[in-house]
Image (cartoon, rainbow, N blue to C red; front, side):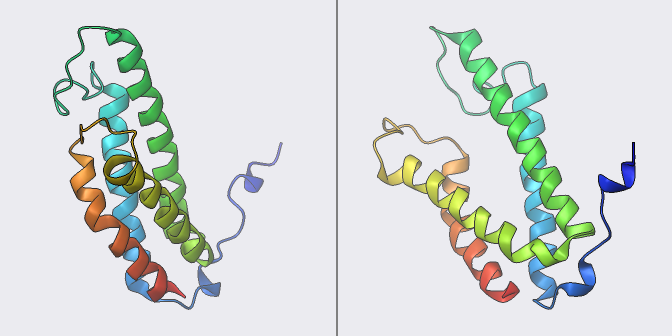
Amino acid sequence: MDFANLFPASSNAGYDGSILSVWYLGLMAVLTIGPGCIHYFLRDGGAQSIAGLRLERHQRLIFHLFAWAGATQIVWGLAMAAVVWRYQALVSLVLALLVIERSLHLWSMWIGSKSGGYRPPEAYITLALVPANLLFLLLSL
């Protein structure tokens, strides 16, 4: 087994975009891992204690769904952190993926019919994140 394959050589020298985009991606990694830990480790995943959801029915299912979402957030945030520290040549790609991800969130929370009129706290932050992600993507190119 060769664990060197887990983290290949750094690609940071190949990145020639704005360093601000790298720092922004680092911030986004922290802002993704943090809520992921809340969703995964908090007893209710933040469903009641933060989002204020009424959970008379299907409480355990909702807690498990929050934990599942938190697990994916933690892993996605760790991937962003790896790009910031070792693989900066991928900054533009990851920022493009963030634009897509947050645009899908924005659509489902504000425009599409999936919200049912309820908007979690993240919905308001996402309004600012989509244009910010796009700005830092453009700076990274």
